[in-house]
Image (cartoon, protein in one colour):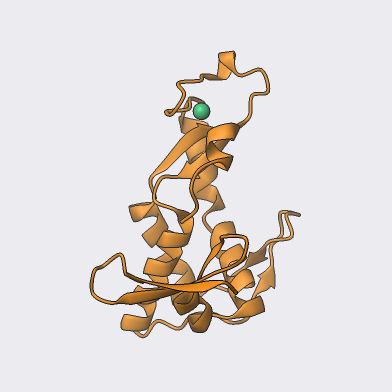
Length: 156
Ligand SMILES: [Zn+2]
């Protein structure tokens, strides 16, 4: 651990505490405390898995085009485009978890294996699963980025 950074949160109604590692990575402690370790990873994995249909829908209905460098599919010989969350996926997850805590929606702590061979986790049918799928549908802004611009994007 190198230093601690305390900043005003996104909603401007509280503080967030980050640890800055020696590699310069910022780790959000408020998030760590809320959901820890293995559960955190499996929760995030399952939250990605259950919105997969929305990603597939986006792919089926949009042309590959990177808005940042204006590379189109025919100009990109590797044809590597990634679907990007314009509002970071992490931010959507954190906001949704906050909503759950405020509204006493139980956050799952047990997970099942997904069936698509991706090794991701899935959620059992529950209020959290239903509401998250809808929340993501209503709030996620999806876009294509070329591989370069997706991978070099600043993390949330
Ligand atoms: Zn690009």
